[in-house]
Image (cartoon, rainbow, N blue to C red; front, side, top):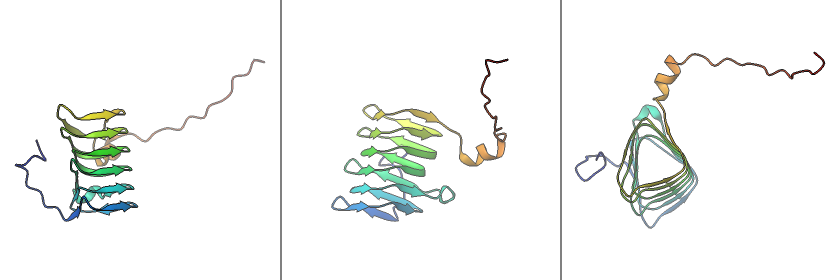
Length: 141
């Protein structure tokens, strides 16, 4: 798997198992979470950022990052615009929006899985939505 022991990633920021953060975390590069975050995890899509929640990590909030590896607990929606990996001990309570996903036996999701395409591609190729005004139906003819 992508985040397994054979993977080589550089972790610019590490939140240790003895740390609890209350508030949103904005980052670029690599973020590794062994601790507890009560807030949203947000990476710039342009950064090619990667967030990894270890089997000891816990996030209460949304995760928005191009690349996401989960082996811990997440209570919130997950938005991955490039690659999402759910490892053996992953537990997600929320909806999961993904482009490419790997899921190992044992991982659990309590929410909906929603396949998306990369945001950039959707903006370029999708037609603009049309607004249609609803008009009440009259019984008087």
